[in-house]
Length: 230
Image (cartoon, rainbow, N blue to C red; front, top):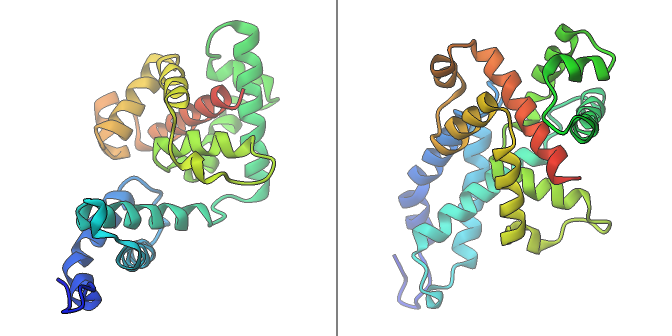
């Protein structure tokens, strides 16, 4: 694993940990829209692995596999975040949805229903549900990213590196926001983000179509963003 000079043998490590990259890519791929290419995730993860080899310091007492896994997954998430999955129109509508959710919840004192949301946005129920489907691809990142994005939106000078670590206050805010979701959306979030079920499996549990699961997931994430950005 090391040369005589104590340096990591990168080629050997690359071969040893490439299966780890593929496992992380496969795990993430099952939770993302079908248009995302597996090879792109593997490539991004391999870059993260090489970065881990460069940055690893064994004196810190952290196993290299643990350190590498963090870098691999982080590199994949960074790759996803740099892509413009949704057209500008959809992004504007997504922001309008979050603003509408916040306004309605403040006025009603409860999470608004879908017909109430559609009406407030001047849409038919069908148009509103199509919007949820359109913006779903940008809402497929891990739940921790919702909090990071909420923090970044309020950073006037760009991303603060400290925002990559969620403090207790932000974790508590996220927990409260999830607890305030309607029951079915809360269950969906648990199944997807904690139990790691995919959309098809969640549909079987909830007895709804896979496309409806995607819509409800998008709505739940929008509710959480609205709550955290308030």
